[in-house]
Length: 281
Image (spheres, one colour):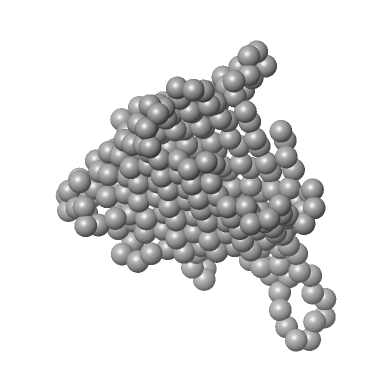
């Protein structure tokens, strides 16, 4: 099973590479790629009010390939984030770590809603740790866990600012060294390293430009297993970006996660950063 899931991820990556080569030949594709580097640092010397030296950095790269014809639209996108922070004499710790890939193919029928097929994948780069006062314990790693979804259904799009889709979905979670709590079923005696769920998925994207220099983007993903339709997993990711000039911007990011398999409570991550931006193409 793991080979199948990893093959899906490989195919999505190869697809992006093929499209990049195709652009040199016929160019039905359009591409965007942006990188952000955010840095912060505090240094104290004989500071009588107390405090610790600190630094942090975060690198974010986003890319998208789009092809739109009269009969179909195909959008593949990727997002990679990684960052670390350090306070005082403590070792540096991972603060941000995520890889996301998505590919959505929509067939145009000239109707208000059109059929689509979608693939998504999510994992991380490096090991994640749970820290105590005296030690640390590894709790995650690259492809451990790895999340994959495949879905088909109907979607609606209004210009480039709003789109939503609803369909049947298969969601897979794979692990290796950390089956608990990501993939193991606590109700069985066996330790499972993979979990497959069949259910309904809804994904809504909103992109608003309040001015030339102020952009808001948000994606709300909902998933419900057919065996428990009253329980919904939520992934809401939003970002407000203010462009200062060609190379400098300010980002406010907010993410809310709820997955009953991982925790009975919601998870929240917020980040405010100013950094350097570069548009590759």
